[in-house]
Image (tube, rainbow, N blue to C red):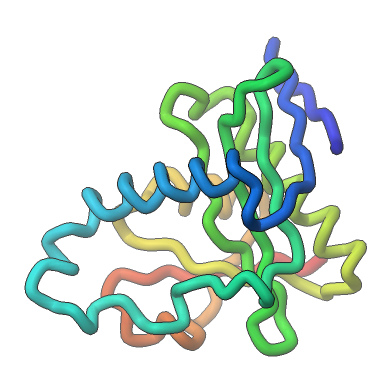
Length: 164
């Protein structure tokens, strides 16, 4: 558990299990939002999403849930092993808490976890309909890299890395 202060808000990021109820609920909210953002690309194209996008629990190295106040879960982030790399997955901030420092707190926590696991870098993929995410990653020192599997055939993908 690590607390981060940004502006007037204090956000606590807690390390939890992949199957933690708050983590599952936040991933569900993310799935719903992303489904709406990319609905036209998925509709009528059952092969649009690559198989490797699904996160298998046994590959997860870290899951963090951000809390505002004592009991309000407002963000989620995970790291999974993808070959020898750690990939940032399912980063999500509840719409009610965007712009309050939650995303930065989640990134700080996940980078600390990756360092503790001995990773030299974190890689990630995001989409072209998430310009806010792209701006965040670039602002926080992530640099664009070539598309990596399984995202190389996913239209609109942007891949990044951050050396730790």
